[in-house]
Image 1 (cartoon, rainbow, N blue to C red):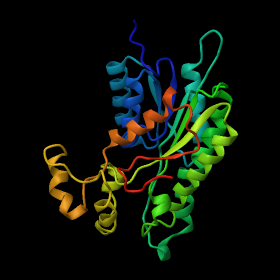
Image 2 (image 1 turned 180 degrees about the vertical axis):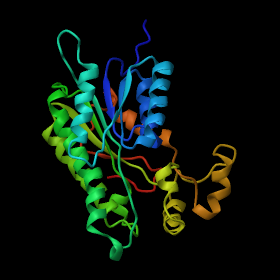
Image 3 (image 1 turned 135 degrees about the vertical axis):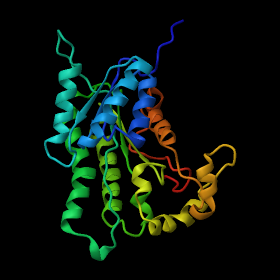
Length: 285
């Protein structure tokens, strides 16, 4: 018997892969044998990405590269695919295949309706919606032709719960879910396409939201079945903050676990779905 990892030999592209949920997804997929291309945007993320690349190589024995590309720039998504092709094409045949794509990169700024600007609208839609579409266009020629490909979009409970201040961000995530369903049909002979919809997760993005917004989230968190804090299991800081916050946030590795499930061979009969990855804060349907 041989100990073959389930994603051995597969190539995964993960946007927003340098930190938070994206880094957790990279660690999970790498642990299962997938080589990883980690997209990141800013210069300040370069060192973090380099460290993660080294970690993935040393810990899991896979090949990993970081690619700096702005998903809000029309040339950014194609740059990720072209760089991956230059790094992972077969040296003799030139064969190149992308097995997994995780659309994780996103930006957010909560603003009341009266303060939303065209510039803010364009920024969020360019990164969160146009970027994934352009990445898929660049990647389609390199996807498998036997339905073995896996595409996962990272949406949000914001797409359907109507949180205050999310006129734009919530709309971008609803658009992502709509594209997910369309791609599931258009690319049915190439790959499955599913979405996950996290709620509050202990990441820099959520920690950067206002106290007012976090209090707006409190009643939603209080009724989420799995967001009840667990003394002795959850970090003490979350247990202590639970009376104020309504419960504990999700952890990046919990979201990564659901994503990895959808990237597995066993998920081959699931496509066009939004899969709950929020502890029951928003049941999927």
